[in-house]
Length: 366
Image 1 (spheres, rainbow, N blue to C red):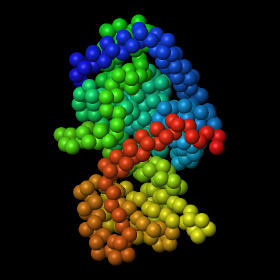
Image 2 (image 1 turned 120 degrees about the vertical axis):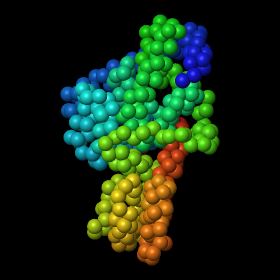
Image 3 (image 1 turned 180 degrees about the vertical axis):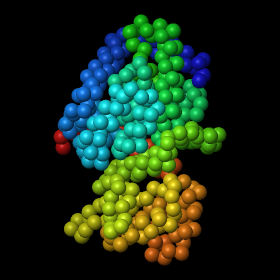
Image 4 (image 1 turned 90 degrees about the horizontal axis):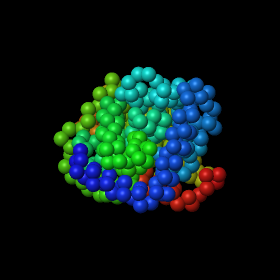
């Protein structure tokens, strides 16, 4: 981390606080309100939450700004995971006694529909001295500070990486305290997030972030999850679902589309009174390519399925192409999508929807 750049921006940050005390006192009060609210959800209270309380708990998150219809998203989370499993997993994540690495990895692999932004925001607002908040803007800020080996994609943000990033932001908090920010009675990791948003957004445009990706990092952060393929698989599966929703489809995960064929994600649209159109996506991180092809062939038995897409890394996509070439019934309808491209599309649409939803063109009650 470039401490020279960091200290310069901390000095600017503190000066702005002193020049505009009312505004920044308002920020401090806002953070206190967030912390009081989320700390009010004890383990016992989380375990007793009903569906409407879960909606209130999740809808207040900044990470939910990307969604216009928050009820739809929260209902999907509860439906996909089951109410009891979701409550128990959330309680264990927030109030569990095991290491955050294990709690993070378990929640990420077992709970569908919640990514690092939502999970880290809950942790940060409940335990602001221990856990940091991760978002696209935080990536921009830490990248500007020359922090090394940042996770470029969500599937890289494992428990071990998240724990490391918490230590990085604690280091920033220490510099804030040393520079006198402690006078404001708030140098939590939530305060660090405000600092990053207000001082370190020198590259807020997503296209600029991607243009910097001309050369690949020497090595991606290691995925140390016991079942790392499942970790990547679930993350990409959920992102394809999100992309479908943003594009206006009825998008669902783990759906049976024909006898013997259960697929990772579908996009479905109804065309007037003519019927349905379905697009099928299968994410392949390991396993038999022949099994993938057979499952996609079976899905085509449903006449509503108009296209099938294999999603994997570049190497596996080449293997799938070779295996599918001689399967005439599949070859013409099969498309291929690199999961790094899935992540880029998701991030771009996420940014777009966040900006549009901030305009509040459609009220929540609509």
